Every structure is written in structure tokens, then in C-alpha cells.
Amino acid sequence: MKYEIINPSDKCFITSDDEQVAKFCTIILGNGMYHLKREDGGQVGGTFLLYSDEGALDADFGGSFDKFGNDRAKEIAACFRTFEYAGEPTSLFDIGARAKRLADIYSKQAAQGDGQ
Image (cartoon, rainbow, N blue to C red; front, top):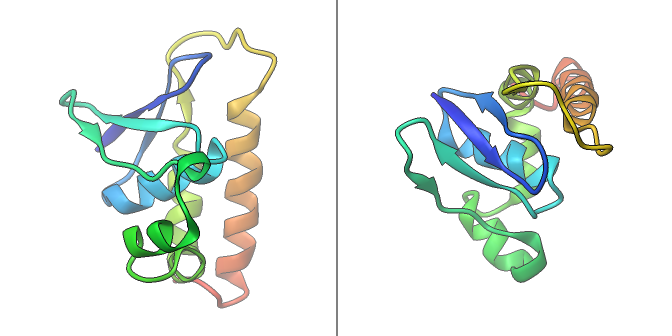
């Protein structure tokens, strides 16, 4: 499914077959300040790091946010690689470049055997 990343600058999207993976990527990508909207217009409930304690974040990801990231590294990298802008980026904060760097990080993590 394609998701719009709700952020204060450019309209952009990521795609994943797993909503939890898309949500994880969005939290990491925006340091907890971005949110997701499904292509059908529904909001994806999320945990914003600014307003959440670590326990709530862990609970939202099956008991451990970090473990989720380790266990699903390959899927997370693939999701980051789907990042796309709706048009030309206008913000100085290059979300697309950050998504690419994160894809590389999670790909390396998966290759080291820490994730699927």
C-alpha cells in the first residue's frame, strides 16, 4: 500500500505491504514528528516520539521498537527505497536523501544477519 508521509514540507510517499513497517520508517525518518495517511485517506495511528515514552513506543511495536527494527531490517530498507516526492522538493531538509541513507543503513544491518 502507498502511504503519504504527513510532514511540514513536501508531499511525499512510501510504499509497504506491512503497515507497521511503514509506520516504523516514518517514525525514524521524521524523528517521531511525521505521520502517515493511507492511500484510501485513513490515518495510520502513530506514536510520536516527542509525546511518547519509550514504553508506549515499544508496546506499539510488539514489545521492543529496536528489536522490530533489527528483525525487520530487510523490509525496512525496502520500504525506505520506495520513497518518492509528489513533485519537485522545495524544502531545504531533504527527506529523500535521508530515506536513502536509512535504506543503506538497514540494508547493511540485514546483510550482517541482524534482520530478515
